[in-house]
Length: 115
Length: 115
Image (tube, rainbow over all chains, first blue to last red; front, side, top):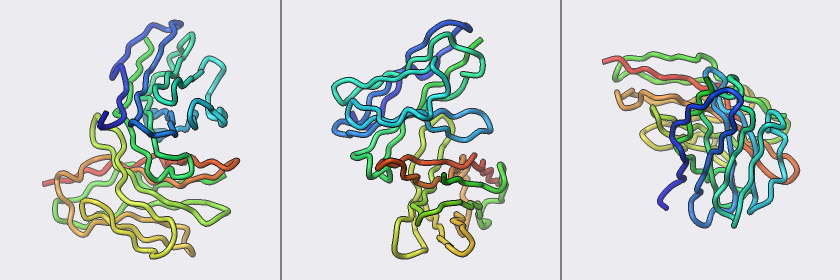
């Protein structure tokens, strides 16, 4: 596609439910990143993938968060047993190389609301 | 670890006035610095970046930023604000860890342009 695509654009879920957020990166981009944007908190790094491998998982806030990437393309961020503090906008970005983050392109994000 | 401080979570200017958004960083190595802009309900878009070389960097939409090592600053300026510049602006530094890079963002500055 022309840009990074994220779905759904909005998600409202009940506390305790699991959610899956999807990211379709730009075709051919090997590096993929997930960030979380909370009100007044800026952007928080969650995880990145080089191909299907995630060498840096240090940003995941708890073991309720997990992510995978298949075929070097689509990535899914899963949040289990959601809590109200998980409410945020989750942004995905992709770039041609992990060494060249300067070329990262961001999707429009998924706004998650936990009620 | 690198960090970014953006002074002023909200900045308001009149149309045609100078725009100055402040960014200070901390880094133990020569930094790569970025400014991104986020329009309402949109993803982040790269405005400009500094890697090496000329310390005055020009970006899109008439914005520019100057890297000042002695002041550890990378302030964003535009001589004359336009209504379409109203958005949130994020300063970021590229952090190298374990051979890979990720962006560390400031908390953002929301720019309002008054007619």
